[in-house]
Length: 283
Image 1 (cartoon, one colour):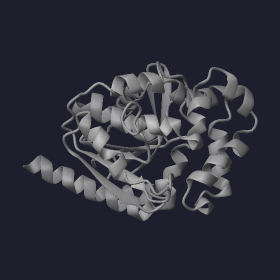
Image 2 (cartoon, rainbow, N blue to C red):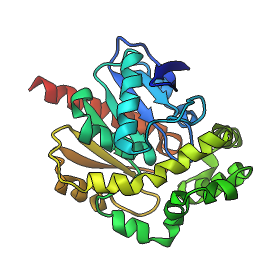
Image 3 (cartoon, rainbow, N blue to C red):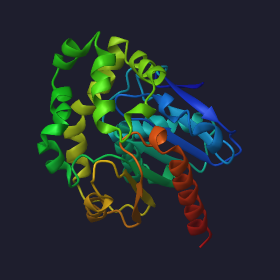
Image 4 (spheres, rainbow, N blue to C red):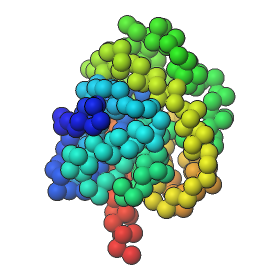
């Protein structure tokens, strides 16, 4: 692990490669930690300086961020990456990490080379309203409530998290017992569990922020697994309509947990996107 002290908080990252290489920031989602990227870190480290962060407050990252709004988290994580020597940064995340990757593209584009947004809906951008209305996405509303989710879930993290792994993975067996136990430990501290719920509590503000049209010239790759039958075509047009001028979609086999379910395909997608960014910068 590498650690960066930013604004009184400690931000931790699993790493591969060295800082002479183009940087790749990898961001996990709910309810996981940087452990999710263990299967892709060694290979990606051959041609990247990889920083797989524990999101602020989670796991080895300690200290509350100033806000759980995704644009604030994106800035904080960019500060940490730059402090650790990252340059030519490709920002990639899934689930909540994907929301943060979009925020980096929208609000911090001058600090990154490109953004990969994976397996998530962006607050305030279609199909956001349809997603909130889906009863299978009940947890967005539950987690946004003050205090109640902590009361219900403290001490039951492993059992509660298993519910999400089992219904959202295309192949739940790839999420091993060891990994599941480590994810539960990452949210064992009361402040870590609250940090995770705070992502949802901030989504109303995220939605208001993202709903405002803003031109984004930074290249964005939207990636989605195919296990739930949803297509990237349901998500890409909304992002484009809000101002993204260079966005493309890609399907990767599997469900929510792309780095564990389809590591080879994720590695290939990252490398292909990086080549496209390099080619674009030459012209």
